Amino acid sequence: MKYISTRGEAPPVPFVETLLAGLAPDGGLYLPQAYPRLPDATIAGFAGRPYAEVAEAVIAPFLAGGIETPALREMITAAYKNFRHPAIAPLTQLDSNVFVLELFHGPTLAFKDLAMQLLARVIDHVLEARGERATIIGATSGDTGAAAIAAFAGLPQVDVFILYPHGRISDVQRRQMTTLEADNVHTIAVEGTFDDAQACVKNMFNHKALREELNLCGVNSINFARILFQTVYYFTCAAVLGGPHRKISFVVPTGNFGDIFAGWMAKRLGLPIDRLVIATNSNDILSRTLESGQYAVQTVQATQSPSMDIQISSNFERLLFEAQGRDAAALRRLMAGLRQSQKFTIETGPLQTIRDEFDAFSVSEAETTREIAQSWREAGYLADPHTAVGLCAARKAGHLGASPLVVLGTAHPGKFPDAIARATGIRPEPPPQFAGLFDKKERFSILPNDQNEIERFIRASATTGATKRAAS
Ligand SMILES: *Cc1c(COP(=O)(O)O)cnc(C)c1O
Image (tube, rainbow, N blue to C red; front, side, top):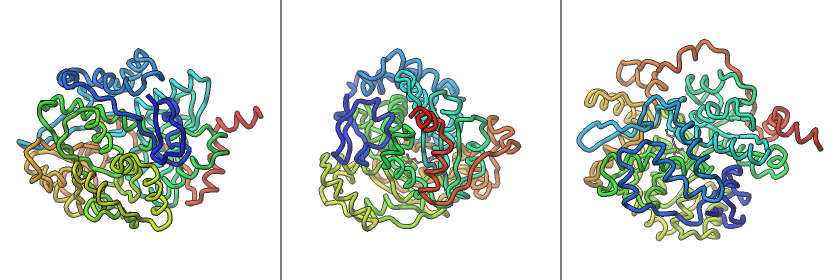
């Protein structure tokens, strides 16, 4: 299996290259040349199987020729061993037709753990086999960074640098990143927004000399492997609810469009999905885009669901590429428009293709608070603000059809106790893993939103570059 870039100006590469590169050298995002379809009987057979077995069946075809299946099996087992629920991604029913797929039982209590725990092991495995070291750089709006740090801390082949917007993530999110004692981990508070931090990471990847010096490796959701690993829970969930014989709709709290694109991919792999519902907070670029056809960037607003405070939704590029019939030249024109004027217009045909599969609803701050209160009152369910955005979008999507609506529960309520206390008067207990989080010493560096200064800091701190510099 080879992987192509959405921008069409980079050669097709094997899985291992997409894994280590993250972004393609032409600035595009990698996608597989084809989507290997799983037979209905295989999907039906997932019912009652452990998460790890389903993961292996879904993931292995994409790694063919790169990573041997027994090694993959071992890494999957290790990755999901530390989850606090034996189902890994259990399903909770809220009413006759609405379910929450709980993706927050991993070490950092948000859905990013499901992909990151496996990604770290696969990257370390590949680097070790090649006798290489790498520098992991990522931007986070809160949860990715914590998940990356939890997954990569102490791994021998990597240094990790995580950039986050200073003062714009929750205390728990920040402390999860800054209190871990591992010499290979560095957290950088950027004086800017998440989009600034993400732009800085993208620029570093486009800076060829730096990229080679540090052997940069990206773990943001632009990394195809993360998307791939996230398709697994769409399958396990559907199997529980009677798929493939019954269609299911998914409602996905969305920021960078990685999680919901994984749902789109699950559909391409053969899972019968009815609607894919994009749920956004007041940073509503995606619902505006589906409505008007114009993707127009506005300024980021800080909300109770900070992991979705995003205006440039990177993985939407993947969907655009597919909706335009994989026409890379057409995609390059849109992206040039975005660079020049912060907007572009999707043509009628591709827009219709997107609307045929997706709906989008934005949820205001007041609606989020009301939803947290209502789902607690009516179903006795404490939803974190991200999940609540999904639950509220599910209410708005209720008219779309009779298929069961599965809302992806993306974070544990204990991660956002303030928002929940405001809405319900109840302060969710911090789960046991948080014991002591507020007593530990924090380590982080505050840097201005300045590309050069951030690059200087990373070059000075990375052992990968230092080793190379010393050797040459
Ligand atoms: C990252 C994140 C999201 C958004 O996921 P995307 O893949 O970026 O769309 C939603 N909720 C939580 C809690 C997250 O951490």
